Length: 351
Image 1 (cartoon, one colour):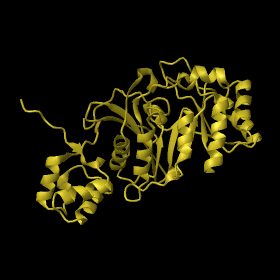
Image 2 (cartoon, helix red, strand yellow):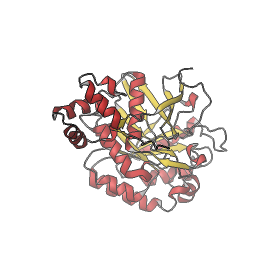
Image 3 (cartoon, one colour):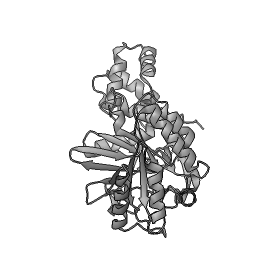
Image 4 (tube, helix red, strand yellow):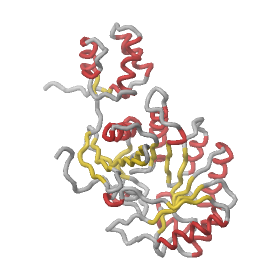
């Protein structure tokens, strides 16, 4: 029985690889730039679309390489215009991705892993555990899929979907650089945001990067005991060490991290919890994003009343801490933070 050889996805080739490829095929050097433009600027999905290449060259490429872009298995559309996609990769692994249009801008929330090992108590993703990490190409493909579907240029990307980006650090940084590449999607570094539960060694590595990518930290409590219960996956990274590391981050980069704080009724919205958050933030360079916990039906945790969210905002601002109350996008389709869980009962794309 003849064994089928799986062809490599041509979009994983770097510019120098393309140069070597066209040389090996006896083609002039300028063909590498042409191929690169089709792949990384025009985002084609087949060799037949590369219309300025000779047919013989297109056939040679098709014999050696493939396009392994994910397929859209399902989607939901929110009343606010957001769209949630279930994208399936060639090995059957599926992740959720969200496109969020607003005022001629298009933001995309992408996943960095299928599932998650952090086990946060308020997050649907972690309920199924971690299946596998995604490659940089698979992360970028999520952005491209949303851009194609909206037929708009993506203006910002948040790595806040399924998974812990810093548990997949190298692939995450590679994806950031691909998205930032001026010969690719050319998204500004400050419009590329990575959210972490607080993996300290990776925050230190992130601070050493020359690009001005944005850092967000899922904090959710400044009381160690509470945070341990809410976020058991980062229990070993104490708040004291996290605070010290974030101070070093701001000194090293001059950039302001943001803290994500999902307010949970009776858990992290008490007066002692609010005061602990003020103490954690006061006198430091940071921005706090407050949000009512996004409801997950199977979870006993429920969102704080709006008046408590506003009270905490007022308290933080009294102490000079910049604070925003963030409205979730796509709540009606379970597309808000903490709600992505890799499955949803909707019609398949095209039905």
